Image 1 (cartoon, one colour):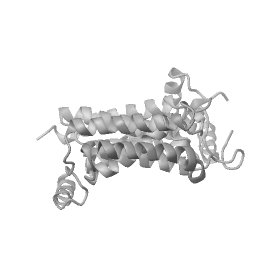
Image 2 (cartoon, helix red, strand yellow):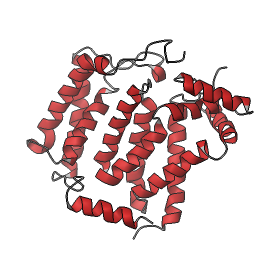
Image 3 (cartoon, helix red, strand yellow):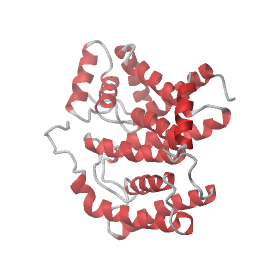
Length: 126
Length: 167
């Protein structure tokens, strides 16, 4: 059943289309770089006075905060570089720090401009 | 190699179903409709003797990417790029959520938990393809076969999590 999928994906992978199995740094380095990206992004957000947690009620809050979505953006962008095997110096650590700083800055200064919260009473309910 | 495909798909369906229903219910999809469309779907299901909380759940699933979309995207990302692909899927689901007037907690959490689950179950031979098929079957059981009966089951689960709609 999956034969066609496997042939397609494997031939694409061999041609490095998807960057599959393209990552040349070790598992330990990958995990370390992810942790560094998460921690640096949270720290930068906190230094820029982004609140640690979203406002209440938490499940419906559109506020940006240090724990959400800052690390999601950081590890998402870092994954993109990782699968393209562009890990830069020190096994990706420098890149992780740069991306962490950038996502902290993005959340503080650009996020609400690019993704504004929905207008109350317009399309949203309650 | 690996497990029998049919048995694997059944396993993956159950795992995907539990993953997205638990994450969505926890983040309050049955509690209130995020947009007008979700309210209309919920009220239509209630009119057909369904459960309003289950109806809001189904409406919210339809109107913005939630944990079900997150699970599907994470499976596809995992198939293409491994664990980084699953994380990338969470990021993309988050952007999709924000474009759909949804704060996105359910979608991103669902994608990340799905990535972890696919990694864990890869050790017993479940492949990401099985999770893609499993997720499509799982969403079919919620939206496709019998919406009214599905809404009653979802309403009971919402009660257990103390997330039933107040109205």
